[in-house]
Length: 459
Figure 1 (spheres, helix red, strand yellow):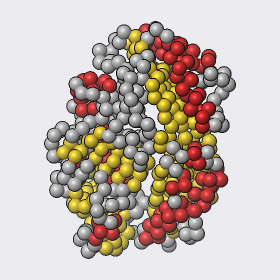
Figure 2 (spheres, rainbow, N blue to C red):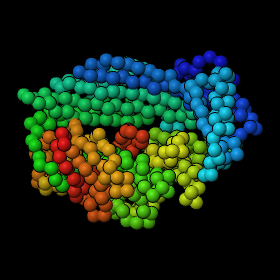
Figure 3 (tube, rainbow, N blue to C red):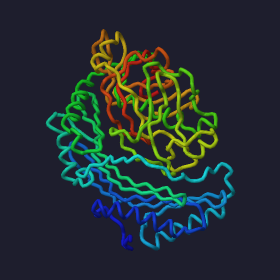
Figure 4 (cartoon, helix red, strand yellow):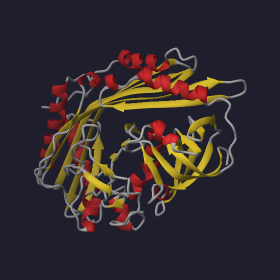
């Protein structure tokens, strides 16, 4: 049984796995026959080492514990959560959920909870990462800082979570995942200017995060950024590095391939149409060894590979149970635990190509090499027009060679149009895992025919 003490991350792996399973069983027993229900529990740790001015200035560790109870009573649905896994905490969260359900109106689109179905075993896990110490992360940071003669800042994080799900329908699933991430910049200082270069690495294994390689890349990019010139706004051929590609594909993922948004008429997706270049294949697959996701979603639906774009044709949408019912299709296992948000892909892949990063740049007669896009905001979900800024490396390419650094520019661009038919001129062989907002993506660099820059970083 789960002890009535506070659950913390010092539990060994076997006990942590047993704790989440027992919490689900106890909460489900407390619901009894009063409602249909699905219970999710997770226990783990999240640790963060921050550094600035080339020195570590903060180490944080959070012990994670969460139980979420979702109940359905004759079409009245409510959800409640708690960080307490003791008997009183579980009893209280169950009663809160039932009380809330009694006050809710009947939901005519409630699709019930997932029936029992096999879940593909997904074990994105590494013991050393799960038990990483501040010294382990400090070693990665030290390698990133290195002796590059530039100042460095950023973070190195590790996270390890065990989770379980049980429902009154008979669905049962368990899993665990670990993730390590390094994200940082180096800053070079010139006479009257500074320039930043970035690098990141994300993996199930902290040992796979090469701090020295990331640091050397970021420092070299920062030094190359000194002496930046001003460039007039306008459309430019571009090579987007993987980090910039991940930023560009964020909104298509969140609100484009989202089944709920499609049902509401706000998605850009037109199934069966050639909306993308023929070189573009996009899919979601939490079961891929390169991914970081779970084998099931918060509703208990098993995950599997979901094709979204095949040879440029939009072929799929991510559904939770509600949007799947509206579309009269099977749910795809992409609930994120919020009916208001709907389902969206969280382990997105874009197929790589056969060109090295040097070959991508080598095909550009006059254009820009873009390291990163940030502060991006969606202006129109139907056209996927996004505005934002470049940062951490923008360079002029002339005659297939990087010639000069360029001052940051604002972009205002339809993402789908930029990747549209005939607009993708090359796809790189440098696909990598990029951690970001709301989604983790495995994407390559790309060469695009045009990207619209509409002002400098101030306008």
